[in-house]
Length: 373
Image (cartoon, rainbow, N blue to C red; front, side, top):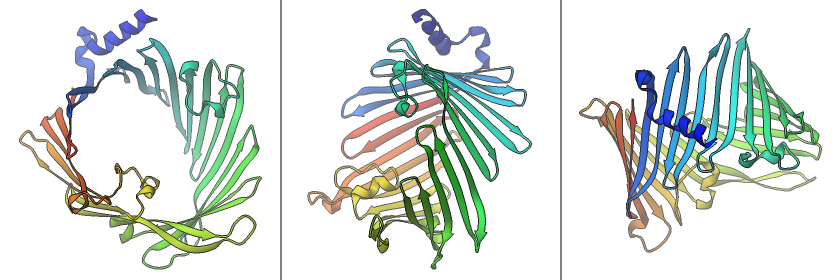
């Protein structure tokens, strides 16, 4: 096993000299310069095209050493589009997982079959959804059939005890009701509980004014019913202004549910200044709510940032990009409430080589680059 993996890795790095012209790929790497110089990671991707098939190797190194070795393949076989891959753990010199996906379009119907296998030492985090006890290996079969507006999926699993049914779901989307209102329907069934749930979704109901409307989701389970109401701000507000809000309700269980108020958590203002130039301002009234609305890299007591992004042509025919950010905090020991300032610069040295520098005022500086060939 060690010898086979070593040969595969060597081929992925060096290739065959006689077929070198058939290879394409990329090499990317990153390192930290401040507060101290350290290596972060490097990844080499090699793709070999052969008779309409693309065979790709991905080799990764970190400060811990040789940590990633993946192989993938994609192409067509008659009317089938096929992709697949296999992952290895170079540290333990072991196989991790493999998958293959076949897609077929026929008479307006799309069939998508995915088969995934994991070794018992590298099971996915949700393995207990399929197996009652830790298996020595796991294989999952997913089949999704789509014929607009209907989509249906069925899953089978094998925990080394034979292939068994896992779950089934059916959904219909974008069905017209009336007055511009559409609705979605979804039904799910699984082997453990039998009937799982039925969900009805109404879109763009109760339009008030200024492009404000609501989405309503009603989910029925064996135990009861849940209702979720989501406000939407369409038109101008959706394009340049987003309001982060939620509904505050009172009532419960078997009593009536009353709308108490709409809680405003924050907002985002986005403005296009020119092509590739924009300004973005994000403010949260409660910074702990930020993770509910997206990925924001706030630190400590930060609640707001202002970002300016601009770009332009370089001497080598490429386009440079610069992003400047100012973060604000509620702490009192910061001038003007500014907690840190960050800057990212991506500069193409050549058509196939670009460098990215990231810096912030907390004395952090990193450098990364990508070379394609």
